[in-house]
Length: 447
Image 1 (cartoon, rainbow, N blue to C red):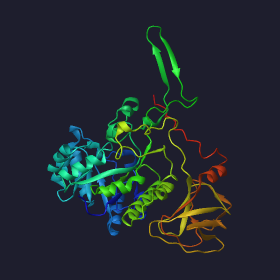
Image 2: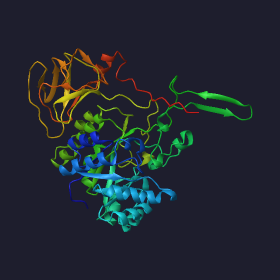
Image 3: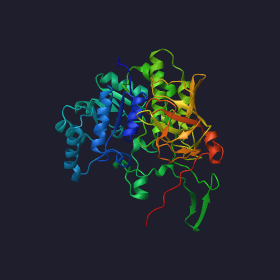
Image 4: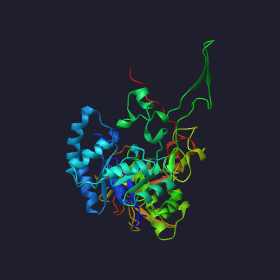
């Protein structure tokens, strides 16, 4: 049985999001360059230099970085994989995440001093398969999303030295552990080679066809929307962290989301940091974490399959919409040095926004010509008396996309988040009620 404190592992879609996740409570992050990663599009935001900078940043803070090399190679790419792993190894990541048994062997040969973690794409669900990879030298297995906690207990009993990592939050795939060809069929983008087009999130029109008469009827569930027949809800296991940790068999809790926003990276990581710390302090209270998680955009939440088996569930898909607003909208993000902020949502003189701090950070209460910081019921609020850029330009309002850094009334912790309630944000834009879901529109197919 595991006796150490569980690790909190967060996504790192780019250097900024990596730093945010680490500042908001992650013990480790995972990510990589686009080469041979399952996040080709998001991975383009890292090159070797910026990934090395991120690794050094994490190591300086006693944190870890796991590098993803988790797509499946063709014969023609084996030499390219070898070269890539050699280059990644020079950056000194704390582990390599791979999917293929052959790549496990390559990693051990080329980078023998770097631990190998097996990707969830390998679909490990039982002790028999786990033993095969353990015998190949895998240190940790990221188990399939469809596994149960009881099966994790069985694996740990059989292989007590093998580390187990489970997903606890983020997007769920319609297919079995991501093994899907819908995107490849419709757009030529292959999910298991890192270029999924998320076709399962789109609305589909359903037809009934009679081949004898040639008659076709269109079936509608919701006018003008279509039918979201494959849209899985997002995983949210925050209310079950106590059960997971009490089992004593899980070594790492993983948050999905390398393509998600900086706000998601910070708020979700912080919520799970508090859930874990509260458990060890005998102060676990699910409503606290769910309140924060509900501030993020989501497809509806489900606690998935770790506690309940798939055939026992009937609430894992969102059939009415693709994604919906959370309860809050990010208004701004403070710079790394804490001296300025950049606008993420329309903000005007006189507006008050909530201050969301990194884990362990504090803030000074001030009142000056730039703004006022108050503490109300344990929450910090910033009211803008003036909106002035660091170059001295004054504005009555600034909008999302305004790139000039704006002065703060006092220095704040780096990467502090400024946010407001979604109803206020939508009202400022003159949009509909916050309960209205956002619909994802299919991209036009290039001819």
